[in-house]
Image (tube, rainbow, N blue to C red; front, top):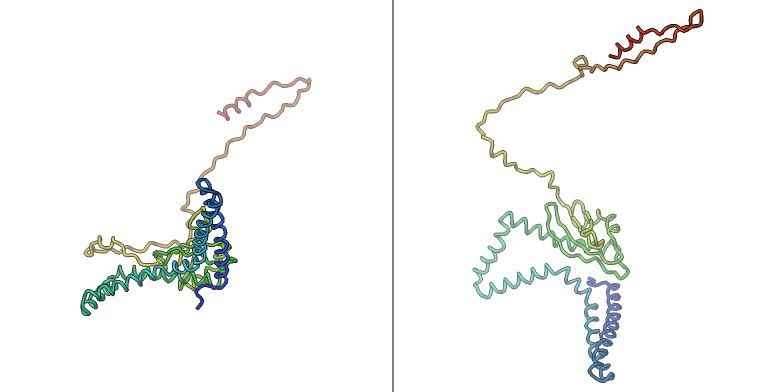
Length: 294
């Protein structure tokens, strides 16, 4: 089983050499400049070398073991839980007899498993540990890493009402768009129903949040407290079913009446008389028009 891939091993070795050279030169020169104010420049140069080389070596070790530190981070919860369990067993076995040790271990293991609340909490946190490793397997198997072969950093996970929520920090070379097309594969790898991914911070596109959904809570039956308020001795009354309309009864519909405004009548022009004079104006028609308007 390959713990650290060859590409990651070569990349860390190259980065470690660069870190050693840069750290040794920068720290050595700065130390020599500061020491030159108190001693001869040649002696200050040797002092800078004595300070810069150990600083560069420390940077080399830190960069070189970074893949191992990432591996330890992935297995940190399991390491802590296993170490605590073994330490507890050893301490109990050293200070008590065998029957008492078995009784104590049985109580520590059996009581949380018997109480429904603690049992569900333990199962939920166990799934969180499993999902972290399943996501790492997805990143290593079918999600393209960057040129150095560095996988995204899986930070932490916590249980939710529908499954688990995992925070991931992407390395250069990946984006959320590269993961959205593979969410169905991630759901299969995590033994879940669906998987969703979105940004965990608006100002940082590399900080993502995975929501692993393995159950539906909206369709679950929820007990209502109103049932306990109702008196079971209350008599029930049966109501006849309401009639179902089959057609519209249009005569029963009130039709609104719309009244249009009256248009004014224009007087007809009078024909000229035989002598050529115009006839007098017909005042009666004007009076009628005025009365119509009033």
